[in-house]
Amino acid sequence: MYQTISSSVSLSKMIAENYKNVLEKVNNAATGAGRDPKEVTLIAVSKTKPLEMLKEAYEAGARDFGENHVQELITKIPEMPNDIRWHMIGHLQRNKVKYIVGKVYLIHSVDSLRLAEEISKESVKAGVVSNILIEVNASGEESKWGGSLNESRELVKAAASLPGICIKGLMTVAPYTENPEENRRYFSALKQLLVDMNAENTDNISMGELSMGMTGDYEVAVSEGATYVRVGTGIFGERNYNN
Ligand SMILES: *Cc1c(COP(=O)(O)O)cnc(C)c1O
Image (cartoon, rainbow, N blue to C red; front, side, top):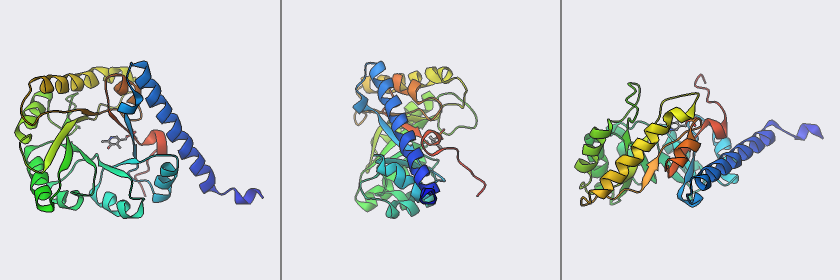
């Protein structure tokens, strides 16, 4: 009988368990910080992972999935149930915008006015409003996308009045670190920028979302106010870019 316990059975168990574990930690981090766990959405970052693994996460309850390549994203969308909210979390080239407008729930990685304008143009053409986040390089690390805190403030203001887009908030990718506490200051700086900008009461600027925290640091991010955490490795295991 043991032959019937195929590797996919243990795989599904592993992903379901990981997903539930991470979700529990997210909820505990929220409660611990005096927040309502319902304010925080766990995004299962499924980039490079095969559909069968996404389906296991879906079975375990995941409805928000994050991808960082347009081609992979648009290939996966029609293969998965249609109550999924798809999140574009990776660097987005302007010439690829037309492929995802109207198909994704939220674009996390808008880091220039030209990109915001392209999303605006394609959204108007398609008759939709695209929800976006402005990506901020809160740590100043050279390898990271996004502008500085000040540049991002200007970008929000410049993009806020564009038709066809709605700026829902801010996103950051913190540095890789063994000690997640080191990233707390970046998460709190992002939150502060959001609070400051909302307080200015500028027309068209009312941001409620903070996309921050990955496998290594999502609990700290939640305690600093994250409303979206993006977790890949912690749910699906290490990524293998060689195949
Ligand atoms: C890959 C990726 C993640 C997930 O990273 P893990 O460390 O595997 O959780 C989150 N955010 C972005 C933007 C990513 O590209």
